[in-house]
Length: 239
Image 1 (cartoon, rainbow, N blue to C red):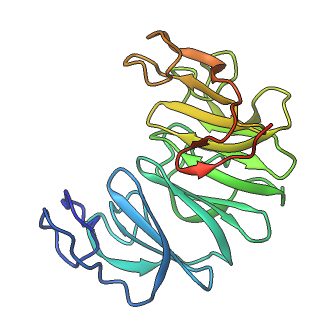
Image 2 (spheres, one colour):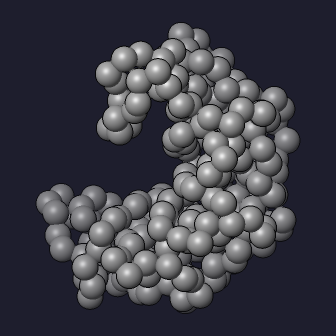
């Protein structure tokens, strides 16, 4: 890891910034690592998670920086994980979704705005496929191809056609062919089966790629399906 380290997000046991890669003090082998605003989470082969950095985002063991990786308690076999600004969202292999960390805007999706020290389950569904997290909002895909969102919505980043916040996962539109989703700080991107790319949310710097600088509160088409292409470094099937 390397970069800013004021909250211990590099996981090397210090809070010193690094301009070259240093090895994180992780006692087990990681198979994937994701980074949030000031915290980092690693997943291992056995499905366990380790977290370090901003104490409001990981396990809340104290209000001090957490520069050393600690195992995340209260979780089962995790398949996917995403870090937001100061919260974390994970999908277990049994299809359940778990969240923890800052919750001022309902980004944990548990129906409250209460900060969670330990992971809490979101709803009762067992068909979640993947998740992504922005600064204060979260996105999820289910196995049936439906798209869901929750949290802060001031710029329309939830894709609901309005700017009302959501404390529970809410379905985005009626489409059932979403295959990939990615949340930015205050905007969202999604790919539908066939490869069409869509975007919504904050667009003040043109980050939606739709040729404007206007915020969008529903998904707008950015690129139609094309042969032999990929988004986010992931090859996508042709039509």
